[in-house]
Length: 323
Image: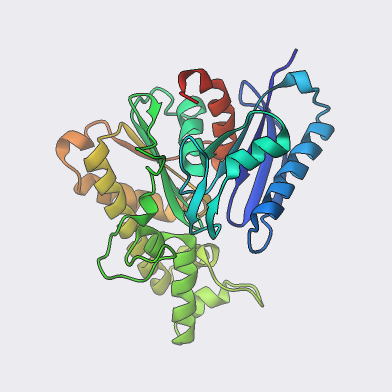
């Protein structure tokens, strides 16, 4: 009998649900927009509906379900699974895990999305042999997950890994979290969109605008297109983003001394050819030589499905966790 995992990746703008086998083969996926305003009840309804539809399409029998795992933006308390003060969902305090279990009628593993991602990279990715691993997603926001000595590091209450809210420019722009100069406020997709909007209002960024479809607002994709055409404004902005990312990653490397730092997220993967090398160069120049030894700074090979792989990994590894 086949053993299957139901995985759900809840994001601020999209919900990606999937059915996978225990070898990490994703059999079917369904992607929908996160309800505008991200009302918890609406989001839970969408998750249940997507999961039910996938089970129907894949003709899954109840006894074939090895487990259900759901990833959500943090901060997320552990083990309670309460989403607390989430900048990306605008949820103050939502008993997410408890409500999922009530609606699904069975046990559900709930983890922060970046924790799921680092589990996926650790279990299925190129760096599965690394006992000390950092994963950083650069997308609409910036987040992280930490594997230390082969185990997921959550911190005292589950709040570890919020690397996007590390201050990399004292007194910098205001972040969604309320602080100033956070990495997320300076090097995320939303940060780029904000900066491009400011440039356009000042009469700058004409080449970037030329790469933007009528009626659309320029973002990371259009910035990358302009940079690949040699536009100096785009190249300068991307160099600033790479430096901020480099500062953040160098800090983390000096703190954790990992074997590998794996980068993912839609923005990072979409701009890999423009961002990865300067980030690698900055990190290599700004970490201690001991911490630089054998260090890998690479992009994930698992693409946009990394969190779904993490859902499978979480189910397979749950015997090693104190759930």
